[in-house]
Length: 343
Image (cartoon, rainbow, N blue to C red; front, side, top):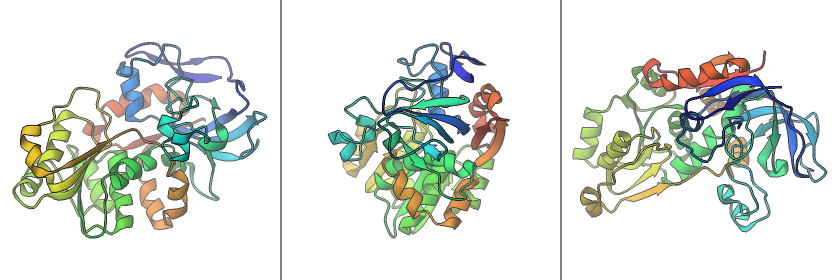
Protein backbone atom coordinates (compact mmCIF):
# COMPACT_ATOMS: atom_id res chain seq x y z
CA UNK A 1 0.00 0.00 0.00
CA UNK A 2 0.95 3.69 -0.01
CA UNK A 3 1.19 5.95 3.04
CA UNK A 4 2.63 9.27 4.23
CA UNK A 5 5.73 8.32 6.23
CA UNK A 6 7.68 10.47 8.70
CA UNK A 7 11.46 10.46 8.09
CA UNK A 8 12.61 12.97 10.69
CA UNK A 9 11.93 16.67 11.41
CA UNK A 10 10.57 18.39 8.33
CA UNK A 11 10.76 15.26 6.19
CA UNK A 12 7.72 13.24 5.18
CA UNK A 13 7.04 11.30 2.02
CA UNK A 14 4.14 9.51 0.27
CA UNK A 15 5.61 6.11 -0.49
CA UNK A 16 4.98 2.39 -0.87
CA UNK A 17 5.19 0.29 2.33
CA UNK A 18 3.95 -3.10 3.47
CA UNK A 19 0.27 -3.64 4.22
CA UNK A 20 -0.71 -3.64 7.90
CA UNK A 21 -1.70 -6.93 9.54
CA UNK A 22 -3.59 -7.96 12.65
CA UNK A 23 -1.04 -7.90 15.48
CA UNK A 24 -3.28 -8.16 18.54
CA UNK A 25 -6.61 -9.98 18.98
CA UNK A 26 -8.33 -6.62 19.63
CA UNK A 27 -7.11 -5.07 16.33
CA UNK A 28 -9.10 -4.25 13.22
CA UNK A 29 -7.84 -3.39 9.75
CA UNK A 30 -9.54 -0.46 8.04
CA UNK A 31 -9.50 0.58 4.40
CA UNK A 32 -9.24 4.35 4.73
CA UNK A 33 -11.88 6.23 2.74
CA UNK A 34 -11.27 9.68 4.29
CA UNK A 35 -8.59 11.18 6.49
CA UNK A 36 -7.12 14.59 7.21
CA UNK A 37 -4.12 16.50 8.51
CA UNK A 38 -4.43 18.39 11.79
CA UNK A 39 -2.17 20.79 13.67
CA UNK A 40 -0.93 17.91 15.83
CA UNK A 41 0.29 16.12 12.68
CA UNK A 42 2.03 19.30 11.57
CA UNK A 43 3.79 19.57 14.94
CA UNK A 44 4.89 15.95 14.55
CA UNK A 45 6.23 16.49 11.04
CA UNK A 46 8.18 19.51 12.26
CA UNK A 47 9.80 17.39 14.96
CA UNK A 48 7.97 18.90 17.97
CA UNK A 49 6.79 15.43 19.04
CA UNK A 50 10.18 13.96 19.81
CA UNK A 51 9.02 10.41 20.61
CA UNK A 52 7.67 9.74 17.10
CA UNK A 53 10.17 7.48 15.36
CA UNK A 54 11.24 7.88 11.73
CA UNK A 55 9.39 5.36 9.60
CA UNK A 56 6.05 6.00 11.31
CA UNK A 57 2.96 6.58 9.16
CA UNK A 58 1.38 9.83 10.34
CA UNK A 59 -2.27 10.70 10.91
CA UNK A 60 -4.89 9.93 13.56
CA UNK A 61 -8.21 10.95 12.00
CA UNK A 62 -10.09 8.68 9.62
CA UNK A 63 -13.27 7.18 8.27
CA UNK A 64 -13.08 3.79 6.60
CA UNK A 65 -14.37 0.29 6.01
CA UNK A 66 -13.50 -2.63 8.26
CA UNK A 67 -11.76 -5.31 6.18
CA UNK A 68 -10.55 -7.68 8.91
CA UNK A 69 -10.89 -8.04 12.68
CA UNK A 70 -9.04 -9.93 15.40
CA UNK A 71 -10.73 -12.75 17.34
CA UNK A 72 -11.55 -10.48 20.32
CA UNK A 73 -13.31 -7.77 18.29
CA UNK A 74 -17.08 -8.03 18.65
CA UNK A 75 -18.53 -4.53 18.09
CA UNK A 76 -17.62 -4.23 14.40
CA UNK A 77 -17.26 -6.67 11.51
CA UNK A 78 -15.85 -6.67 7.98
CA UNK A 79 -17.93 -4.43 5.75
CA UNK A 80 -18.87 -1.95 8.52
CA UNK A 81 -18.17 1.70 7.77
CA UNK A 82 -16.64 3.33 10.84
CA UNK A 83 -15.26 6.53 12.32
CA UNK A 84 -11.80 5.96 13.78
CA UNK A 85 -11.13 7.77 17.06
CA UNK A 86 -7.84 9.61 17.39
CA UNK A 87 -7.42 8.12 20.87
CA UNK A 88 -7.36 4.34 21.39
CA UNK A 89 -9.08 2.92 24.48
CA UNK A 90 -8.96 -0.58 25.94
CA UNK A 91 -12.34 0.13 27.57
CA UNK A 92 -11.62 -1.94 30.69
CA UNK A 93 -9.07 -0.09 32.87
CA UNK A 94 -10.05 2.48 35.50
CA UNK A 95 -9.13 5.54 33.38
CA UNK A 96 -11.17 4.20 30.43
CA UNK A 97 -14.17 3.51 32.67
CA UNK A 98 -13.88 7.10 33.89
CA UNK A 99 -13.85 8.32 30.28
CA UNK A 100 -10.22 9.48 30.31
CA UNK A 101 -9.15 7.37 27.33
CA UNK A 102 -6.00 9.41 26.85
CA UNK A 103 -4.66 7.89 30.08
CA UNK A 104 -5.60 4.29 29.22
CA UNK A 105 -3.58 2.04 31.53
CA UNK A 106 -3.50 -0.99 29.21
CA UNK A 107 -1.55 0.43 26.29
CA UNK A 108 -4.07 2.81 24.74
CA UNK A 109 -4.03 6.61 24.48
CA UNK A 110 -2.61 8.54 21.55
CA UNK A 111 -1.26 5.66 19.48
CA UNK A 112 -2.13 6.35 15.84
CA UNK A 113 0.54 8.36 14.08
CA UNK A 114 2.46 8.49 17.34
CA UNK A 115 3.39 5.09 18.77
CA UNK A 116 2.01 3.02 15.88
CA UNK A 117 1.37 3.66 12.19
CA UNK A 118 -1.45 6.10 11.58
CA UNK A 119 -4.26 6.82 9.17
CA UNK A 120 -2.70 8.84 6.33
CA UNK A 121 -2.54 5.64 4.34
CA UNK A 122 -4.63 3.37 2.16
CA UNK A 123 -5.04 0.91 5.06
CA UNK A 124 -4.58 1.24 8.82
CA UNK A 125 -4.38 -1.09 11.80
CA UNK A 126 -6.67 0.15 14.58
CA UNK A 127 -5.82 -1.08 18.10
CA UNK A 128 -8.66 -1.77 20.58
CA UNK A 129 -11.18 -1.59 17.76
CA UNK A 130 -14.24 -2.28 19.91
CA UNK A 131 -13.75 0.96 21.85
CA UNK A 132 -11.85 3.01 19.26
CA UNK A 133 -14.22 2.89 16.30
CA UNK A 134 -17.83 4.02 15.88
CA UNK A 135 -20.19 2.77 13.20
CA UNK A 136 -20.84 5.50 10.66
CA UNK A 137 -24.40 6.85 11.08
CA UNK A 138 -26.69 6.28 8.12
CA UNK A 139 -26.28 8.87 5.38
CA UNK A 140 -23.62 10.93 7.19
CA UNK A 141 -21.12 12.30 4.67
CA UNK A 142 -17.50 11.32 5.18
CA UNK A 143 -16.51 15.00 5.18
CA UNK A 144 -18.62 15.44 8.31
CA UNK A 145 -17.86 12.06 9.86
CA UNK A 146 -14.09 12.58 9.87
CA UNK A 147 -14.58 15.54 12.23
CA UNK A 148 -15.76 13.09 14.91
CA UNK A 149 -12.29 11.51 14.99
CA UNK A 150 -10.84 14.41 16.94
CA UNK A 151 -12.06 17.91 15.99
CA UNK A 152 -15.52 17.70 17.57
CA UNK A 153 -14.56 15.76 20.72
CA UNK A 154 -11.66 18.18 21.30
CA UNK A 155 -13.90 21.21 20.85
CA UNK A 156 -16.49 19.81 23.25
CA UNK A 157 -14.33 18.12 25.90
CA UNK A 158 -11.49 20.63 26.15
CA UNK A 159 -13.34 23.81 25.23
CA UNK A 160 -17.06 23.74 25.96
CA UNK A 161 -17.16 21.21 28.82
CA UNK A 162 -13.91 22.13 30.56
CA UNK A 163 -14.73 25.81 30.16
CA UNK A 164 -18.15 25.25 31.76
CA UNK A 165 -20.09 27.02 29.03
CA UNK A 166 -23.65 27.46 30.25
CA UNK A 167 -26.86 29.44 29.67
CA UNK A 168 -26.27 33.17 29.53
CA UNK A 169 -22.48 33.02 29.46
CA UNK A 170 -20.27 35.15 27.25
CA UNK A 171 -17.83 32.93 25.36
CA UNK A 172 -14.75 34.14 23.47
CA UNK A 173 -12.99 31.71 21.14
CA UNK A 174 -9.42 32.77 20.35
CA UNK A 175 -8.42 30.96 17.16
CA UNK A 176 -11.05 30.33 14.48
CA UNK A 177 -9.45 27.24 13.01
CA UNK A 178 -11.31 23.92 12.69
CA UNK A 179 -11.47 23.19 16.43
CA UNK A 180 -12.22 26.80 17.35
CA UNK A 181 -15.10 27.01 14.86
CA UNK A 182 -16.39 23.64 16.09
CA UNK A 183 -16.26 24.97 19.67
CA UNK A 184 -18.36 28.01 18.85
CA UNK A 185 -20.98 25.83 17.12
CA UNK A 186 -21.11 23.22 19.91
CA UNK A 187 -21.24 25.97 22.54
CA UNK A 188 -24.64 26.81 21.07
CA UNK A 189 -26.01 23.61 22.62
CA UNK A 190 -25.75 25.38 25.99
CA UNK A 191 -27.50 28.66 24.98
CA UNK A 192 -24.73 31.15 25.80
CA UNK A 193 -25.66 34.82 25.63
CA UNK A 194 -22.89 35.64 23.19
CA UNK A 195 -20.12 33.82 21.33
CA UNK A 196 -17.19 35.85 20.02
CA UNK A 197 -14.52 34.64 17.58
CA UNK A 198 -11.04 36.18 17.39
CA UNK A 199 -8.47 35.29 14.73
CA UNK A 200 -5.70 36.76 12.58
CA UNK A 201 -7.33 35.61 9.32
CA UNK A 202 -10.13 37.81 7.92
CA UNK A 203 -11.35 34.86 5.84
CA UNK A 204 -11.62 32.59 8.88
CA UNK A 205 -13.50 35.33 10.70
CA UNK A 206 -15.96 35.52 7.80
CA UNK A 207 -16.51 31.77 8.08
CA UNK A 208 -16.96 31.99 11.86
CA UNK A 209 -19.52 34.78 11.47
CA UNK A 210 -21.40 32.74 8.89
CA UNK A 211 -21.46 29.73 11.19
CA UNK A 212 -22.97 31.46 14.20
CA UNK A 213 -20.46 33.75 15.93
CA UNK A 214 -22.20 36.86 17.29
CA UNK A 215 -19.02 38.83 16.66
CA UNK A 216 -15.87 37.92 14.73
CA UNK A 217 -12.91 40.30 14.77
CA UNK A 218 -9.16 40.60 14.57
CA UNK A 219 -7.35 40.96 17.91
CA UNK A 220 -7.61 44.58 18.96
CA UNK A 221 -10.61 46.60 20.07
CA UNK A 222 -12.75 43.59 20.91
CA UNK A 223 -10.13 42.16 23.28
CA UNK A 224 -9.54 45.64 24.71
CA UNK A 225 -13.26 46.06 25.37
CA UNK A 226 -13.40 42.70 27.14
CA UNK A 227 -10.28 43.54 29.15
CA UNK A 228 -11.56 46.96 30.21
CA UNK A 229 -15.14 45.77 30.71
CA UNK A 230 -16.63 42.79 32.50
CA UNK A 231 -14.66 40.25 30.44
CA UNK A 232 -15.80 36.91 29.03
CA UNK A 233 -17.08 34.17 31.33
CA UNK A 234 -15.31 31.54 29.22
CA UNK A 235 -12.33 32.06 26.94
CA UNK A 236 -11.41 29.10 24.73
CA UNK A 237 -7.81 29.09 23.51
CA UNK A 238 -7.80 27.28 20.17
CA UNK A 239 -4.75 28.71 18.38
CA UNK A 240 -1.85 27.23 20.32
CA UNK A 241 0.50 30.24 20.36
CA UNK A 242 1.98 32.26 23.25
CA UNK A 243 0.27 35.43 22.00
CA UNK A 244 -3.14 33.77 21.77
CA UNK A 245 -2.86 32.50 25.34
CA UNK A 246 -1.93 35.99 26.54
CA UNK A 247 -5.00 37.36 24.77
CA UNK A 248 -7.10 34.83 26.67
CA UNK A 249 -5.75 36.01 30.03
CA UNK A 250 -6.70 39.57 29.13
CA UNK A 251 -10.18 38.77 27.89
CA UNK A 252 -11.37 36.55 30.77
CA UNK A 253 -13.41 38.06 33.59
CA UNK A 254 -12.60 37.74 37.27
CA UNK A 255 -13.77 34.30 38.35
CA UNK A 256 -13.92 33.10 34.74
CA UNK A 257 -12.46 30.10 32.90
CA UNK A 258 -9.71 29.77 30.33
CA UNK A 259 -10.10 26.46 28.49
CA UNK A 260 -6.97 25.63 26.50
CA UNK A 261 -7.42 23.44 23.42
CA UNK A 262 -4.51 24.59 21.26
CA UNK A 263 -1.40 22.41 21.07
CA UNK A 264 1.55 24.58 22.07
CA UNK A 265 4.85 23.79 20.36
CA UNK A 266 6.79 26.47 22.27
CA UNK A 267 6.94 27.71 25.85
CA UNK A 268 4.09 29.92 27.08
CA UNK A 269 4.52 32.48 29.85
CA UNK A 270 1.87 32.38 32.56
CA UNK A 271 1.60 35.90 33.96
CA UNK A 272 0.56 35.04 37.48
CA UNK A 273 1.48 38.56 38.60
CA UNK A 274 -1.51 39.73 36.53
CA UNK A 275 -3.82 36.75 37.04
CA UNK A 276 -3.62 35.92 40.75
CA UNK A 277 -6.20 38.51 41.79
CA UNK A 278 -8.71 37.48 39.07
CA UNK A 279 -9.44 34.05 40.59
CA UNK A 280 -9.24 32.46 37.12
CA UNK A 281 -9.55 28.73 36.43
CA UNK A 282 -7.29 27.40 33.67
CA UNK A 283 -7.90 23.94 32.19
CA UNK A 284 -5.64 22.13 29.77
CA UNK A 285 -5.38 18.55 28.57
CA UNK A 286 -5.46 16.02 25.76
CA UNK A 287 -8.69 15.02 24.10
CA UNK A 288 -10.09 11.67 25.25
CA UNK A 289 -12.78 11.16 22.54
CA UNK A 290 -15.01 9.57 25.19
CA UNK A 291 -17.74 12.03 24.14
CA UNK A 292 -17.91 10.86 20.52
CA UNK A 293 -20.98 8.67 20.98
CA UNK A 294 -22.79 11.45 22.86
CA UNK A 295 -21.95 13.96 20.13
CA UNK A 296 -23.20 11.60 17.42
CA UNK A 297 -26.50 11.35 19.29
CA UNK A 298 -26.82 15.01 20.31
CA UNK A 299 -25.88 17.13 17.32
CA UNK A 300 -28.93 18.06 15.26
CA UNK A 301 -29.00 18.06 11.43
CA UNK A 302 -28.68 21.84 11.29
CA UNK A 303 -25.62 21.81 13.50
CA UNK A 304 -24.10 18.99 11.48
CA UNK A 305 -24.63 20.97 8.29
CA UNK A 306 -22.79 23.94 9.74
CA UNK A 307 -20.02 21.70 11.06
CA UNK A 308 -19.61 20.13 7.61
CA UNK A 309 -18.51 23.55 6.33
CA UNK A 310 -15.35 23.24 8.41
CA UNK A 311 -14.04 21.15 5.50
CA UNK A 312 -12.99 23.82 3.00
CA UNK A 313 -10.81 21.78 0.65
CA UNK A 314 -10.61 18.22 -0.71
CA UNK A 315 -7.51 16.52 -2.10
CA UNK A 316 -6.51 13.09 -3.30
CA UNK A 317 -4.99 10.95 -0.55
CA UNK A 318 -1.75 10.80 -2.55
CA UNK A 319 -1.50 14.59 -2.08
CA UNK A 320 -1.07 14.32 1.70
CA UNK A 321 2.25 16.15 1.50
CA UNK A 322 0.49 19.04 -0.21
CA UNK A 323 -2.09 19.10 2.60
CA UNK A 324 0.72 19.66 5.13
CA UNK A 325 2.03 22.57 3.05
CA UNK A 326 -1.43 24.11 2.88
CA UNK A 327 -1.97 23.71 6.63
CA UNK A 328 1.25 25.56 7.36
CA UNK A 329 -0.13 28.63 5.55
CA UNK A 330 -3.79 28.20 6.53
CA UNK A 331 -3.92 31.35 8.64
CA UNK A 332 -2.83 33.39 5.62
CA UNK A 333 -5.30 31.92 3.12
CA UNK A 334 -8.17 31.35 5.57
CA UNK A 335 -8.60 27.64 4.88
CA UNK A 336 -9.89 25.32 7.59
CA UNK A 337 -9.91 21.54 7.15
CA UNK A 338 -8.58 19.61 4.15
CA UNK A 339 -10.24 16.25 3.47
CA UNK A 340 -8.06 13.54 1.92
CA UNK A 341 -9.69 10.69 0.01
CA UNK A 342 -8.31 7.98 -2.29
CA UNK A 343 -8.92 8.47 -5.97
